[in-house]
Length: 394
Image (tube, rainbow, N blue to C red):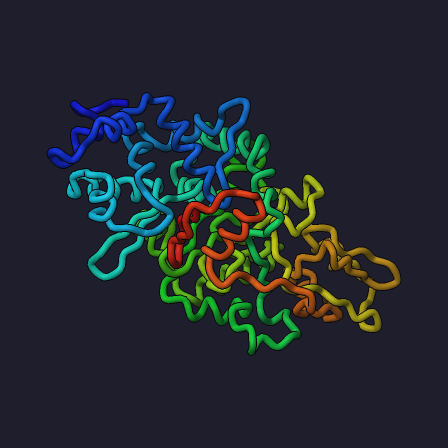
């Protein structure tokens, strides 16, 4: 690590350091990245190791050694710099400057509440991966792709709990959502206090590794604290609700699936394609059950008497859930309830209905994270979350 004299130990308050604490901080370059990998691996969506060590190359590309050491001091819970400094015996002014700089680089998450700023760990996903959208080049994209194929697809499916929910655009839905306002995508977008849009990290990665697809790229929507983070960091631009709804409708027309974190709070909407999306690829290219990745709250139901057998819905379905017999038939085990088929049916023979056997989204990110950890058999160190936006749990 390129240290000033004493490394981080040199930034401790006078008399506050001990031999043990100094030894813990004075890590070799390789060791600090291994420790950071282990730290990130304790998140609900972890950061498992690979034989090739590509995950360490990713961390070395994103973090300096000092930044990796500082990241190890944080919690999944939002804390201000003074709290972290007091816990670690560091100079609060120095730490505040470094944490702010790291948050600007997309290495940790940041929230502002009044005149206070809070920082917490950013997991690999949703976190470090998405926040690198502007810095990603061919080298980093190739490392991300290698890591996904070697370890991360399996990690995403490890708990059997879907991290995302699918929400169709409201005009395709034939069920009343009065009792379920959090499932009304259009109204939830209109209620958002701040909204940003950014490039889709998955489609940008694919393009950089020579697998570009024809779908639109500026489609990644964030809301609330997550949107503020994107806007302030310059990785997303601020938009109003009407532009967000235009983007959603254009994404719908293009054949993209609207998916957000599997909670009742709306923090993001990824408009996902079947060829690049980290979740969708598990279904479309590996034949894995959708339940590992996406919570299908709705389903498509075809009125056979109204169906003309044109086959538009068959071509439109991103996961091959529709087949054509005398009329279109939907395989509800595969159906995402995304509404794309309903939007393209010229006879309006397809209705999107709430599944009677649906599993409701989690109330908060923390509850979903703890459920994932339990399902993976992990040890729950502490319950924590990042409020509205990003960050992780451990």
